[in-house]
Image 1 (spheres, rainbow, N blue to C red):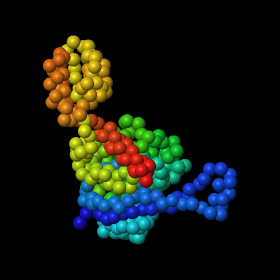
Image 2: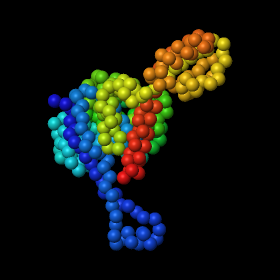
Image 3: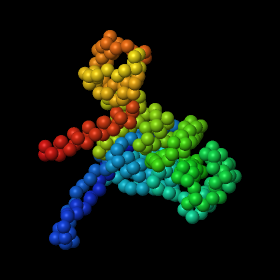
Image 4: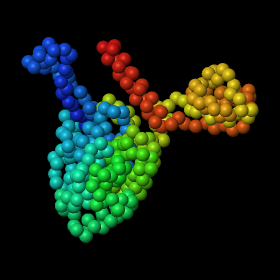
Length: 335
């Protein structure tokens, strides 16, 4: 039985359409106009026990709304979902003790108190046995290297330190499902790496089920094998991350090191010039033209080294979202 099952899940909002101008505002007091926005539109997927899955999409795509549905914070307009056999929006206490939700832009720790005070509160809320609580706290603070900071007020911690404390609070009751919404947002490179390393180790050790949303593709590539991509409320891809570039990108990158150190002219006949810093040159070329372009480059120029690479994952996904938005805008214009 999968840990998470979602079937035809939808969530609609009625949004007030406010008109510009004083007269329109006055009219709006007596006759309001609304439009219906589908934040989640007929979404279906399954996640197995112990799987860590990236849930990707642009801002406003419906990622956070989906996580809120799975955590029971909001009700769906239609559709079904179960997490560990529970219907999330029934909000049963037994279910609440088996999952955690961490939102990178929301705090669950008391701002003016030391983190250890919030941890004690979590211990009481989740009814964690004192001995187990002490073991868990010692393990988590050790893994995240913050033992010396638990007695310091949260407001005095750096953003990276606060996020590590948030993760500790979320994991103290040993949840079986962890929902992570932008856990590394705003963190510096060092803090991002620490969080990545911890999540990778912890998930492998505990075999918990994790859904991760992130705009940092390094998080995704470091932690997940599978990605569910959502855009405008609909799923665009559900499968291995390695398949995303193959499926959605029509180009590859040729990286050259030229023997004589000079950059030739008229390179546009081969493809798009991405970078030229003598003696190195990068070209973006259509996949089907790779053999032809390589043959011409090797025949016409002195080449010391050459490699063919996939485009970066973030570029491919950004292009997909842009294409979807343009297609959607064109459809609305046509109507």
